[in-house]
Image (cartoon, rainbow, N blue to C red):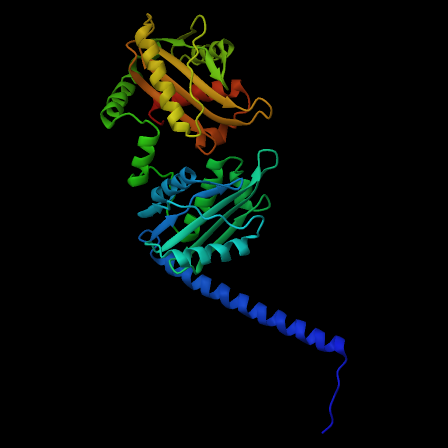
Length: 371
């Protein structure tokens, strides 16, 4: 027998290529198996149960961000959603694949009650902005089902431009729910269930009776509002009071002949506690303004108070709230707008004057029945 002796470099090359093709084949099998598991989830997407672990931002877990995601998925018709009581922390500075392996092992050991478990992570800093939005879904055994990462190069990231936790969560929810074929959470007939009730309570939303009465008062606006006297109070803009914006809103209302408006004299500062829950801040504002009107009644038919949050350094807009009360201080309109709502998307407010115009547009929408 003649023995062939191959040079050492060739032996090494064969070894490397064998390892490469074995790994490539294993990766291909993993992807195929994950696709099978995802299709099984998709086939019953609205009926499956899922546990959401606290979302990781800047290396820290946030359970309430997971609760926002739960609300989005509930409104997209997913029925059984739980929040985990403990967090999963991925190893520091790991890629999506390593994070997935760690989460899979973590869930496998936990023996969770739901069909699936979800982990989300938003990577970035206030200085750099959001660099990546990650989502990993595994089944109850820890097998990967959905692994998704979005960066500024991706189309959905560009479309939603997630530069705050709310929009990061919206992007994560949009990616998952569209892949599963679930309906738009922003549709008119989106369901209201456990997580809607949770956020109603967290946000200080008034009772259903109060909301019905407010809607009845709003309907009374339509006929008599053009002849009504409306007092526009100085605007609370990122903590500072601006009578100039009140004058601008009054001018817009008069020019459009929406009503007879004038800016209120003096300054009224309603102190609102710092709060990441935007709706909670809205209803605190509404409650304090209602109390002020009840204690300081005027001859105006209606009174309007608006609050904007704009980053004075970057000019970035975060939210617009406004409250309209009748002469007795009862709520007529309590309106909230942030980045992902349609009127904001079309108006693209940058300055406080842009926000003034959006307040007037929103009021016009209410008067026309569009909201």
